[in-house]
Image 1 (cartoon, rainbow, N blue to C red):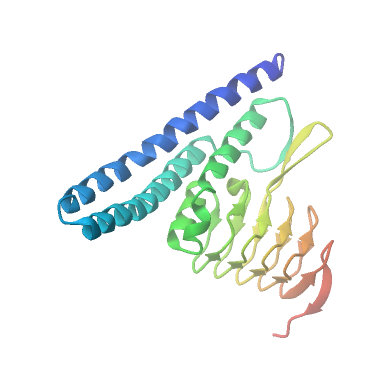
Image 2: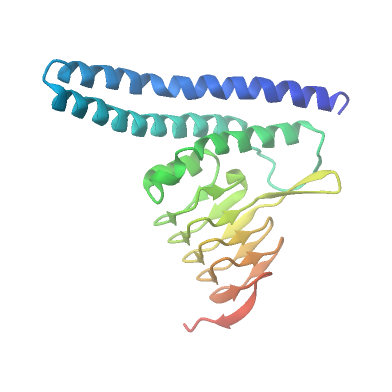
Length: 235
């Protein structure tokens, strides 16, 4: 793309300003909550006044966090990459679209960890484009490229696990979906690289690194760096 660097730098400034505005707008309901609570306790003595200020700040922070997740999820939904797999020039609109989604997710990470695991976290990831089954417990805030991720029923994803649906190589951005089967367990601190398929009931040991385009069969335990077969689970 001609003049890509100029476009990239210009968009970076615009995006930073844009998300700064969104972060501010997410605070507006918190401001009104703070105002109303402090007004109720303003003339009731130092203890009640301090109680009102502190409680309103705490509740306001939670309200801001929920708002920022919804806002980032909304923008991620609008700009999510709908191309499911392929190689694309790094200097292309696809790269810009992907970057916008990544920035949205990084802003959400300011609060996301505090609501994991919960339906709020699952709702956010669904808004970002992830396909998530029933009974899924997600403890990680590092599920990147959510639109490229498919998670089956009753899956558990441990804290600090990283799942990527993209990589950059040879001047191209490579999009490759990750599929996790029903009842799989992804241990804490794992790294699941693009294009990987984790079978039903499979277990990825903590801190394992699953290389790109790996295929983990059903009901097998894998671990290590890079992840290798350890044993088959009994039926």
